[in-house]
Structure formats: structure tokens, C-alpha cells
Image (cartoon, rainbow, N blue to C red; front, side, top):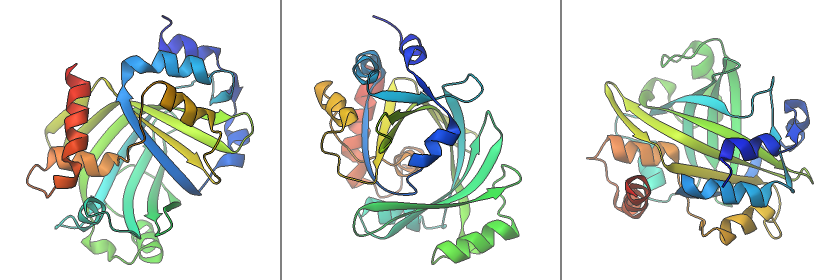
Length: 250
């Protein structure tokens, strides 16, 4: 069977300027996670209906994130308890382009995810005045109460369907870090389908179903914090951790 890298090379490219038409800052998200061995079959099924983001000849990109939370992990707990109208706050670095943004993601009670962001000059866990003002404007939280709680990094490629109404990301090689402690996931793939319309007829969704990759909500911050801070309340995340452990230990 062809390798994922070989199959990705066969996809028709889409430029960043073209992809901006499906930026989907206000969207519906559907997530999946599965074993990396399923990637070749998935990509073969998707190749005719999707294009791949390509920038300067590169199709797989590296991301670094710093996630912020309160001392008592309020944002994590809201997600664990399945509260609606919840927030996620992170600083993200797009490694190849060295672009850095502070991003706020808000999931409302209609299940839609609204993302706001502002450009920052450097990748640091110290919140600048600009960052603090942005958090005050876009969240109900005091930015001075926000602390860097988790670092993660991963590799990602992005697919855009030919009708330009949805895009999907697939992340691999996830690494979690808290201070000097690190945890790597070499077999886990995390996929996210982003759309502003109904998912009916989505070829990505059909390919996931065909390859036995069920929909399953996952947040890289929340599940990462559950792994790296084992004393946190995490009953609702245990089934996901068990499944991820099985994927990694196959």
C-alpha cells in the first residue's frame, strides 16, 4: 500500500489565498480520532473530491500551541462538564511561516464554534498588553488570571473539498509538554471536519464511516491536560483516554 506522504503528493493543491474563501471562523466542527494505519485508505478515498493546502511546496505543516487556563482549571472543567458557551484560549505558532496568533475559541449553545484571533510578534507564554486587551474584549475573563498550563505540538495537513464549502484537517505526531515532562503520541491521528452547512453528503464524513472511524469529540487541550495533570477531574474523558491508549499500544 502507498504511504500517506506519497498519496498526499498526488492530491491537487490549493493555495492559501484560495482557501481563505472557506476560512469558516464561525462553523460546525465534527471530530474523529483513529489509528495512523487507516490514513492510506482514507486518503485514497478522498483524493478525487479534495484538494490539499500547499504553501511554498510544503503540504504538511508544524504547529505549536500554548494553552491558558486559571489556576483551578476553570476552562478545562467547563469542557469536562460539557458546559455550553465555553472558551479556549491559546497562543499558536505556525512554525514554517513563523506566524504567531492569540486565538480565542468560543463554542456556543447551538454547537457552533466561533474563533477570533490577533497577530502577536513572538511565541511566548507571557501575555502582552495587546494579548490581555484581546482576552478582555473577547472573553468574560480577567487576563491576569490566565496562566500557561499546557504546551503541545503536532503536524497537520488541510484538505478542502472541490465545492469549497468545507475543509478538514488531520493532525499527527502529537506531543504534550508541561515543564520538563513530555508525552508523545506516534500512532494517533486526530481529524476535524469544519463546515458552515449540513454535513449530509460530505465525502469526508462518508470516508470516515467507511473506514470505521466514528465521530468522537476531542479537544487537544482538554485531553492533553487530562494526561498531564492526572489529579484533575476526568471521569468523562476516561473512555477517550482508554481508546487513545489502545491506539498507541497496538
